[in-house]
Amino acid sequence: MAMKYSRQRQLIYNFLMSRKDHPTADVVYQNVRQEFPNISLGTVYRNLTLLADRGEIQRLQVGDGVDHFDGDTSLHCHFVCSDCGSVTDLQMDCLDDMFKMARQNFGGKIEKQMTYFYGICSECLDKHTVKS
Amino acid sequence: MAMKYSRQRQLIYNFLMSRKDHPTADVVYQNVRQEFPNISLGTVYRNLTLLADRGEIQRLQVGDGVDHFDGDTSLHCHFVCSDCGSVTDLQMDCLDDMFKMARQNFGGKIEKQMTYFYGICSECLDKHTVKS
DNA sequence: TTCCTTGCAAATCGTTTGCATAATG
DNA sequence: CATTATGCAAACGATTTGCAAGGAA
Image (tube, rainbow over all chains, first blue to last red; front, top):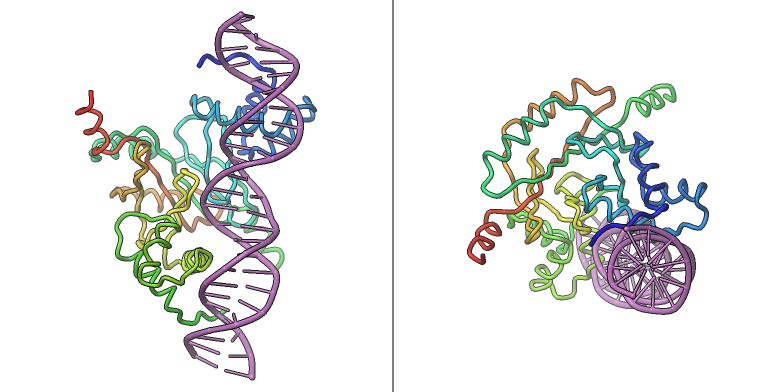
């Protein structure tokens, strides 16, 4: 299943790489559409799935019912704000160690690791403080 | 919103506590139905959501498109087999440390942490070895 | 009697898919 | 040409929800 070039896929990929947040398929669609008005949602979904399967991007299931996508495929974890829903990167130095440790202690073969933190982001904390 | 007793919820909760795997809503439904034939899928979903919101059980979004539920609400991580789809507990001693560390270094307020490992479980590895 | 729960069925909604057509190699 | 990709719209499937009736406090 060789992959042929397509302008749509390129735009989708470029858009994802240009963002440090983690857009949903629909956000990708709305944005790419501005540069390529005829693109369809189905095409966006197809390409996101394709890219994720090939390991060129990462699919995040943070638990809000919608898939998020991340152009950064390195091992890092995410923070999900229960208030505003934002998904941000979170640097944890011990992640690599945990991955190695898990691989050593586990009977099967571990290929991937995903870590999510949940809570209230600093922006939302500030908002609430001001309000009350 | 005080919670009133219901036989259905009790059965759902008991079933979940009796399992070490992490059943989906439908699996819970199919099992509870044997003891309580009139229960509806909607009721199962409503109670699983209710219990999860109250923190009495945990909702797992492992990435297979279906929610799984865990009666064990302690901090632990899970392994998801990409082959057979099984979801099992995975003990990692450093989890608590990582949680503490994240809380210290992060600007917002971290309340929860979820870690998933993906790969091939030992059972599936064995199967493949025998096959080839 | 008040309010929570239920069963049922319809509605939601993110995502996938079938198909005829267009673009790539 | 052969194959992969697209747009469109319909299909899917897990989960949620409205409603009238039942059960708990």
